Every structure is written in C-alpha cells, then in structure tokens.
Length: 171
View 1 (cartoon, rainbow, N blue to C red):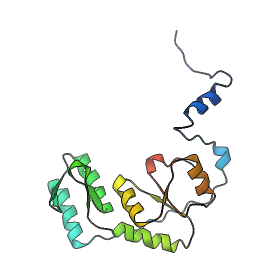
View 2 (view 1 turned 30 degrees about the vertical axis):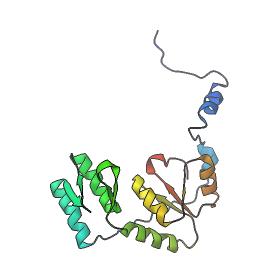
View 3 (view 1 turned 60 degrees about the horizontal axis):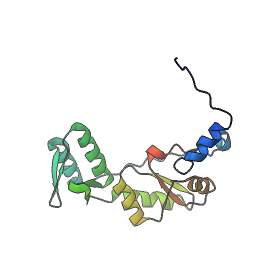
View 4 (view 1 turned 90 degrees about the vertical axis):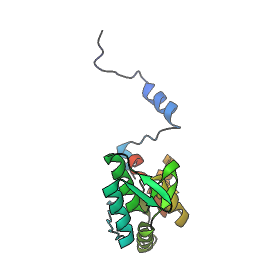
C-alpha cells in the first residue's frame, strides 16, 4: 500500500506542538501581519593596509601566520570561510582558538547603535567569535526564545543579536 498524503487525527497537531514546544518556536503569520517596515542599513568598513595584506596573503596562499599561530584553509570552501571571518575582525586558528585582527566592524556597530538614538537595533552575527566579541563590548540580548521575540516586538530590547540561520521568527 502506498500512502500519498497524511492527515493528522483530531487533536494530533496540538499534541505534536505541545511535545516539541521546549525545543521549537511556532508562530502563525496571522499573529504578526502588522509589522513595521524593515530598514536594512548596509555599512562599508575599510581595512587598514596591514589588514588587507593579511587578507590577500590568506587568499593567495591559503595559509597565514598570525600572532605566532598558523591559520590554514585546506579547501576553497574553507578559504571563503576564513576570509569572511577575517573581514569580520577575527579568525579561528588551530583548536578553534580565536585570533583577533581588528575591531573595525565593532566600531561601526557602536556608531550605528548611537545613531539609532534609543530605537531598537537588531544585529545579525555569523560566527560564534562575532557574538563573543559583540557581547564583550555591548550589552545585548540574544534572540532565542518566544519570550525574547515577544520582548523584541514590544520594543523592550534595545540591542538584540541573532544568527541568520535562526532568524525566521517574524521579528
């Protein structure tokens, strides 16, 4: 017998949502249709000559000596990842150790937060070291739970951070 579709039994959908509620967030679009306009603020950040040299060396040679440690990219995909990290201001070395290069993006973020003049700011981060460095410099709250989302939507969080892979929350 071949099954072409599934139809949950009465009450099954609610039971499923209840069972997974501690590890997932479920939101209905109808509850969040009245959304403010999304403002994307793209800010370019310039690297110094020394930072560009490190970036170009990594791009050309797939390896870089940084602060006495070697940063190695074994493939084109790893290289793209390392270059993205470097552009953000830090890169993972051996044993996931974070090697800092610059704070230019953090400086730009500080300017953006100040320019927001008290309005909520949502900051996307990509690498764990980005989040760590942001937390070291600013008071932020990570958006992880439905309570966080509700507080963000009510304007209770001045500066929030979120990873793009988990950002389909209707923020």
